[in-house]
Image (cartoon, rainbow, N blue to C red):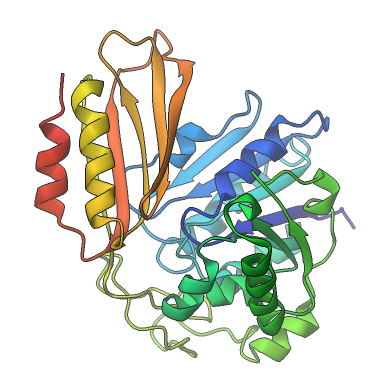
Length: 346
């Protein structure tokens, strides 16, 4: 019997550091070749362009959340990869920050073709030491990401006090006492801590979610997580197999892009001012900008009021100098964001 391809699912709430971990995995001299599947919340993909790795093949899914409406796409991508078996050593799936890992993990047990060719090696959850406690109160996805994890990276430990770190660790342990827990800054962890773990424990998951292996037909969804309501602008959940997942109905993404450059003298003050005023509603912000007279891409990442941005690699000659920004949060003021962003065009 042919050996199954190991699959690592990287999950974690918005802004926790999933792409940082993915880039760390791809950048290390491990000699392995990965196929990478990146799923984003929102119509404009940013993370795909932030993933390093010259040799990796990146598959992007932007039209919904991997745990519900585009799970069929995930199955099709994996089935396509299986036809090219031998050209890569493992598959890494980076979910959206709003994904419930249960339906994603279920894909590897209830879809016959996928199950025959691939095995879930581990669910690796990146948790933000600064914000996780808040998200456990208002975001059921964050709790499920902790509960289903085989490995947890408690990241950004440099942003909290020792007492706060103990508190958030206790909250994690109250939800999931079984996962291997690593304290990290910038997701600095040995690759053997997250890859090749052979850690996914089906028995434990069945204790958490007895219907995990239940397969529903396309019209009769067997199980609801009772997380509110689906609001990924899809109208209804397709639930190709089994577990159905609902998202916070107030959660939305606002994406703005222009084919051209921005004036940094206008953009940076506007961005800083806006997230200071509206950061309570903005769970996640990110963007890639082309600044006037600047050969390098400016990339920023934000969580609530906290922003981090810098100039990164040069724009490639074949690349269009395009500026784009995505905000994800609750009750976002789309017109205000759009007008503010467009007013900063060079």
